[in-house]
Length: 368
Image (cartoon, rainbow, N blue to C red; front, side, top):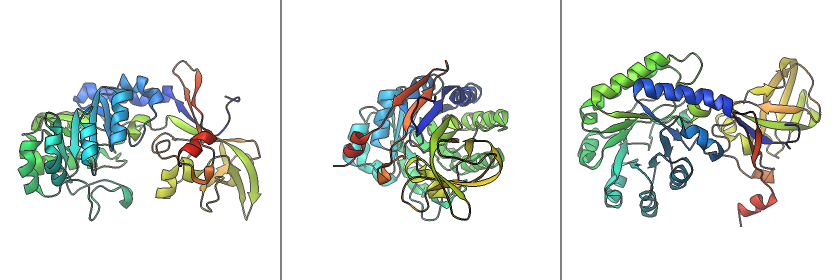
């Protein structure tokens, strides 16, 4: 590991496997299939492992759908908030199910997807999210069909529905109540469907989550309405399986000590900046010394967070940020021309592989 040049994302397949085994357990116990949400994690160098435990992929764009088809295989669900006709015709070549966000898009493109399984996203008017930014049922939400009468009108054109209404929901009681609400409001419509997707945002791989009750509820919902249930785990599939490994470049002082590392919050862990959260540290160990850790870009707010550490950080020290898989590599960018972290995998065998290194040519070719 000491021979690897920082910064790099380090994916640990053993930790990934822990999540995947839970996903398989849910499938075997409840009958619900699981599709990897590529909007969260598209790093295909570990798809060979994930493919053994999951049923396919779900996408939010043409490129994600194509990647799922080419690199993951198995079942491909294609969704987009807004398709162009060119997108739909391209997606139709490799998607198993095409899901539309609105009745108008379904009506517009139904002939282009003739012969495929089609679905509609439904906005049930309820949701679970810690952030308004990520709330699918927020005021004026454009996500999904709200008008039940219009949904009824579209039933002859679809074989399934998607209810994506959660974001980081680890509250099983809330989910159970929500499923009862959906069953009550849409049950007569679901009985005419073949399948239903409950979307992602369900944190069922979290330690202590009531898996037995979760599986029983999914099985009950599926049986009551006669539908194949799909889950779309993103973060639940890859939570806690990766780190962003960095090196301290400098330590400055402005009322408190500030360590500057060779990575950037904005460029390499953007979600934390967007949601104003702070990543946890894998190392160094915690203690009583207060340290701010900041990125190397020129953005004043490029700050990972303020931490209490056992020892004072010095130039050359290694700093590891935890849980660096979900919504990190898919959002990394070239702001400031800051060097892009390499992608490294520790395989199940313990072997460490550097999968991809980025350089100046990649930066140059990202624009023209």
